[in-house]
Length: 170
Image 1 (tube, rainbow, N blue to C red):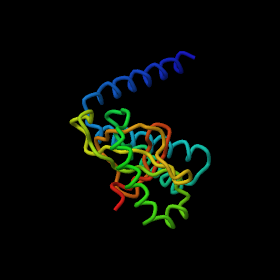
Image 2: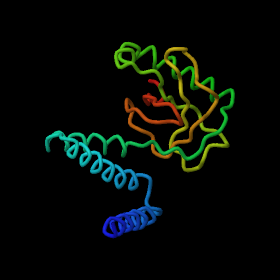
Image 3: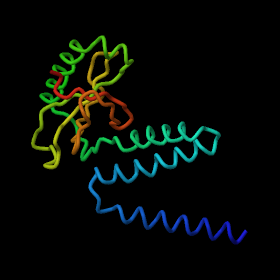
C-alpha cells in the first residue's frame, strides 16, 4: 500500500512540475507538448487494452494530432451588424462553392473570417464567426479573435462547435 501511495504522489508531483513548466510556452509549443503526451497516453491505453503495437502507435499518433490541433481563441465578443453581415456573405459564398464536399463530409458548422474592429485583440490574426450549414445562418452573435487560425479545410473547436475553417470563403 505504501508503494502505491508513493507512486501516486510522485506521479502527481511530476505532473504538477511539468504543467507549471509549460506556463511560459507559446500556444504552439503547448500544443506540441500536450499533443505528444496525450498521444502517448492514448497509445498506451490502446496497447493495454489488447491492440497490436502498430495499432497502438496509430491510435497514439492520431490522438496526438487531434489534441495538438487546437485553435487558440484569444477573445470572444459580440459581433457588430457589419461583422455579422460580412460573415454571412462569406459563409454563403463558401457554402455555395463547396456545398457538395461539405454535405459529403457531413459538415454542420463552418468557421468564416469576418472584419476586425476596434474591439479585436491586437494579437488576433483572424476574427471568425460560426455558420450553420443546415439552418443557413450565423450561429449566435459571437466573434472569436483567433491567434493562430487552423488551415483552410481543417476542423477546429470554437466553444461547443466543431467547425470546418473556410477562411474568407473564396
